[in-house]
Image (cartoon, rainbow, N blue to C red):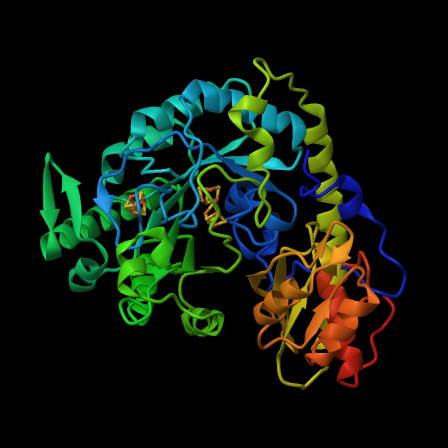
Length: 484
Ligand code: CLF
Ligand code: SF4
């Protein structure tokens, strides 16, 4: 078993006196908590790592790649790989039958107590390939009734399955909506297959748009939470996504997840081959900042693959390939139940601590800063710099400590030794960030970072991210942090 998954001990380490607690308040802004939404909605999102930024520190999702067929062509997709609406292009998943998928879900639930959501995100379209999608959910619900079900779709076939989604207790549906103007849509979708024939150009984009809006409206009318994914394509739909955000908010979308186009000629996609670039991290952040005040934004998406398993940002899929699955996995529900109890205690502790940290920050007047954090979950600074495959980025100012996004990087330390070439990649990933919080760091990488103008802070190992960042910021900008 990989050590990627967060352990119980890593999220429950006691908070040292004097360093405060953690973050979940609205003032802090890093996540929505039970105080920010009706209780029945919180109940639906509190264990969903994609629908709640706060939950993604604690809970894991898994995808099963049971739906290979698709009914549209996106210019950022190569069918050789998974659906790029929910996955990184360039990785392929092991396709499963519904029966194989149910076996795999049981095997994962037996080993990963953090598992809370089963999603179907391709490798084609879950609603076009609806028979396999629903068959899989039916096979799983018998053995794991507490698992939340989630689907992702391009929306074209969605209106035909609204009742079936409700009947299968699917509370979470993602629709990829890249445009509301078919003229822009025609630049993204060369064709769709609908009502027995192929449609192209503006006609195709108009049908797709109308079906997406119909699906969104009917799902929200049924109380199903809809997240909208939009792929940000510079020069094509980047500014248009402001209108998309307004339109989906008006139709009741719960979240808007703007994802950067990943474009590479090696992936063989139309955009990759024609040199269409993806946005820079700073362009994505600028757009997300412009969208503030519209539909709620998801900023913690990891564009995971159609067979991803684990906490967002980690992937245990290679530990659960078909050849490694037992014929009849033995499953004991107790570890998952106990884990949820631990999380409830942690959340309460963290919420209290964040209120204190936020109050301290309210006294500061300095400009906002972006900082990077090494974490493997639990909302704590609990990862060695050398092991980080991504950095979580937080923005801090008088308004609080807010999750801003993440930056991927190759882990610097391999087999106990630092890799100088990888340090270049780490420095590139940290562009625009001059402070990184780590649980631990060696002297050499610390010096290398310093030479590049980046300060590594290792004073808060295992503390909650927000309290540590708040304490550092308050001290650095002249406000004395109080003992929590
Ligand atoms: Fe999967 Fe998508 Fe459900 Fe999450 S992923 S179907 S909503 S359970 Fe999550 Fe992965 Fe981003 Fe998707 S991080 S790509 S948003
Ligand atoms: Fe590819 Fe998904 Fe678009 Fe279908 S909907 S073409 S699988 S990205």
